[in-house]
Length: 382
Image (cartoon, rainbow, N blue to C red; front, top):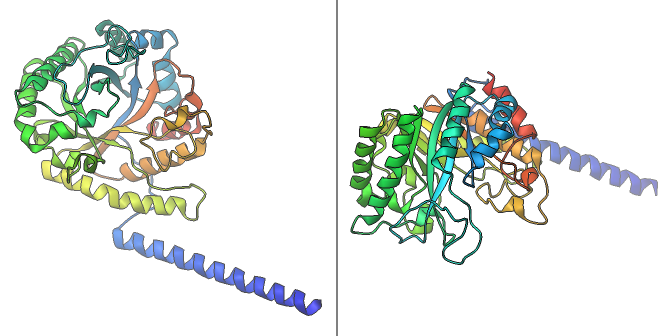
């Protein structure tokens, strides 16, 4: 019995030694990889120029209701944000439709079901004015979504230019609003992967020229970081766009998985090393067009599984959704530490801060009343 016990103990000591050796080898591998790639895994905080948040409304008077509950003031208090991106939505039937219009009925015309109302111009103005009262800077960011439920990235302009005519009419409406309200920045498009291919570049240049005749503020486009292969396109949207030098900034919507589990060995180190690789092609585009980068959207839901799929907006609304505040905070920490170190990077518009609180707030994208908000505040106060 004693002999058997000694063997077990001896085996345990051997296994522990092996575990320690393996751990040391992993640490050494990470260390030398950092040296090779010139990566500082624990960088000092650096001042972020554009300290922003996406401020969303999915109804016609959402921003007015947000004002009634001091949503903008709460955003400032919890995060020390200095910018907001006002996000609102107009619609078309499907990817091949040529008519874009606000939803004024609250009904999806394709199936008769309830649908999100488009923010009115009055509603948007009230949000702008409230932000200005709080000494915030404002970006307007109109989106076009599809009643068919498909991603806006699939929008395919027709050969007769009708879609671009409708889109230009919409954008010029908001450009005039931006001019009237002295808005600081205007986003001219969001994740239109198919519609920003090379063959449409001239149409975008024409639109930019028209906007510049009405609005003298900063211009940006919000390109998708990934998913171009879904549409048979080899280059990512931010790489294929040819009109970056006609804008003031390169905008990127960044929803990318960097780690599966925050509790896995060396989760932080591995995530930072992965980010070191992911930022390289972004830096290349920044250098090519001599334009700095702003993340026009970036974020993650505070729900289990979101680390694997930061882009999946449905996770937090599932009946079995499990709160994961630490996973959200971890993702924010990696984004802050990685992007803030880049000389070509100017700032964030985190997705998102809601004008009206949703039922699944505890598991959705907002960091309101969550540890991630405290983390952001520590950076945005710096």
